[in-house]
Image (tube, rainbow, N blue to C red; front, top):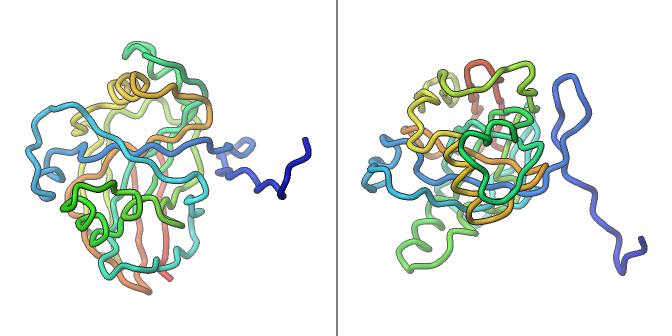
Length: 227
């Protein structure tokens, strides 16, 4: 195929023990832990989940530097379990959702909190607060054949060795099969999609030079330096 301009390379994430995983889309679940919903000023009751997106090329590899983004003075960390899909579809049943999972990773939903807040207050989209360049650090993907289905386990984040966030995957308001089911009722999911499943309480600002270490039990440890 000949294009009018050079085509950009496919964004891919390493797979432990396998070929790289090509990323199609990145979906993120908002306020999916009750304590985090409360710290953000929301009612943590089980209302319908909501989603936002990041561009595929916002991925930052593990053990690397994330540039501090422009136009913000309040860059926040949000540690998350990431689900990588090997198949998709529309209206995927809860009972069939786990069959779509290729594997898991540990990710950071980095957020320009000041821009997000300004957009929220004006009733505008969050895109520039959430979907900016380098906003989606992520480890290699661990195939589900090695990890098993991840439905519980510790999740935490440390900044410069001090714990900031701590929770358990089993505390998700909408668990992973329910999330896949609901999201597939809004859009048709496909192989190559990533789902950032939500963050526990303790989100806070980081500055240049900070070392972020994030962990999900049974998956991996993510290490990112803010450049």
